[in-house]
Amino acid sequence: MDLQLTGRRALVTGSSSGLGEAIALLLAKEGADVVVHGRDEARTRAVAEKVGAQAVAVGDLATDEGADAVAAVAGDVDVLVNNAGAYDHLGWADSTPEVWLRTYDVNVVSGVRMIHRFVPGMRARGWGRVIQIGGGLSGQPMAMQPHYNATLAARHNLAVSLARDLKGTGVTSNVVAPGAILVDSVQRLLTEMAPERGWGADWVEIERNAAEDFVPNDVGRFGRPGEIAGAVAYLASPYADYVSGATLRVDGGTIRSVQ
Figure 1 (cartoon, rainbow, N blue to C red):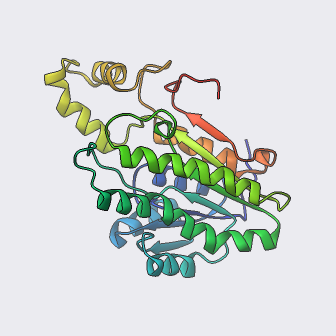
Figure 2: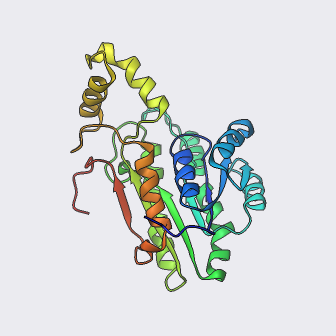
């Protein structure tokens, strides 16, 4: 299926690894001119070479200076994927106000910086896509990582607010909400935890049992980065012209809701 992205320029923030890398790879495969972004220059350039990216943008989006540096390299962008972010495993007792502020700046304000720098150009050209990478914890938070849960909720909220502001411009704003996704670091963690949790010895068994313990869902496994990339590519395409302010959940049915 041709998603008609040839000639479109896409910036995927945080695309030097994990979900962002998978999104950048698929958008490039679909014909988009991709700008790969990261904070580590060597790792970002390595992914850019794999993607065949048109540009490499290095900068910390939690700062205005970093955002300006990325914007200068990226140029006019038609598709902005706000994927960059961070999380930890702190609970309420350890998530100090300072941790909350830093997490909010990294996970929320960084995306706002990108929106301010790229959406005016999209408006002027009469077409564009802003896609936030959110998550199910935005509406179904857990006790751990309260600061991270809250930033996901903010990402979802700002995407809908932006969609209302973009009415009639030809630019849309939407969210892709992944469930638990199997990136390398997650697989290593689950494998290390398996013996004490009784999840089994081979990976197929470990994944099935870990999914049941952590993220019970209808599919019975963790998601793959490429499955998130597919949702992003759809929302980036003209086939999603009539999708506005929506959340596309890609979580195997983890969230038990009709909304």
